[in-house]
Amino acid sequence: MPKSQVRKKKVYTPPTDIRPAAAAASKKPSPAWIPVTAVALIVIGIAWLVVYYLSSQQWPVESWRYWNLAVGFGCMVGSLGLLSRWR
Image (cartoon, rainbow, N blue to C red; front, top):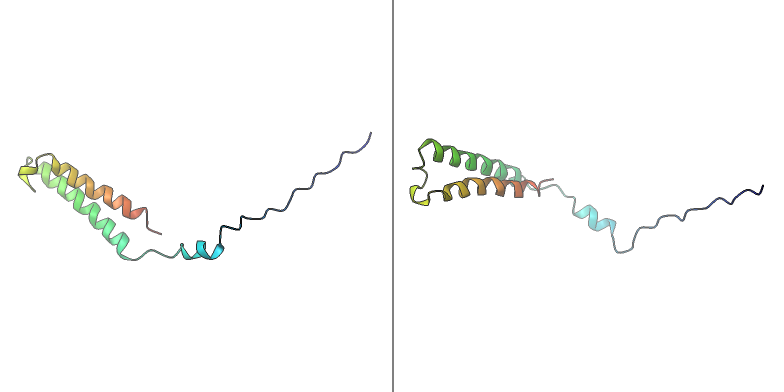
């Protein structure tokens, strides 16, 4: 019985439009203010919500009513946005 031929795979060559220098430049460490600001936003958001509920919804701003929830959760979502940029 004849033996089948072995297939040779072509050597992978990366596309020319991707430059290794550009990829290395984008992996710089993030500035120190990003994690500090993110943690501060988390703490502020949680504190805002806790004060809002413990004060029977009179503080921080009584006229905002349920928009106080949007401020508290908005701070926490903003911190998630910052943490997504942290390397």
